[in-house]
Image (cartoon, rainbow, N blue to C red):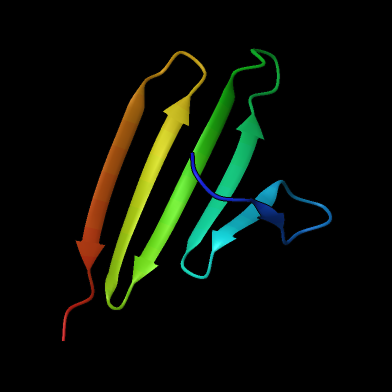
Length: 66
């Protein structure tokens, strides 16, 4: 992941990569699996990616209707 992450929440692992991209790092209780969610906004479009420590990646995008 490129860029510098800026932490924007003291209690949650939420970071801002730039003005329109946010990163949330989580860890499953019990299994310990680390997962990263990346939310990107561009006008009326939203994209989300989920990346786990094993390299699996899931992504979806959508656009706001008029």
